[in-house]
Length: 84
Image (cartoon, helix red, strand yellow):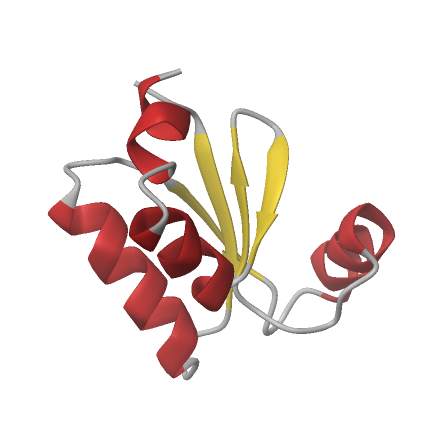
């Protein structure tokens, strides 16, 4: 199964939506809460050039946010990424 990392905050509805899709797929993930950790937030920004959450990585590949994850699902590409 894929190594999935999600940068989140507790009050983010898009984070909940992304995790819901992954849960439906039976995928485990590592969640990094950046809401109270400035170092993690800075690491996220350095890694993605983005300030928004969620930011999702599958096997080290940045796939973007919740909308991007759902776009991969609609395009039929998410399962292949998660299988790797």
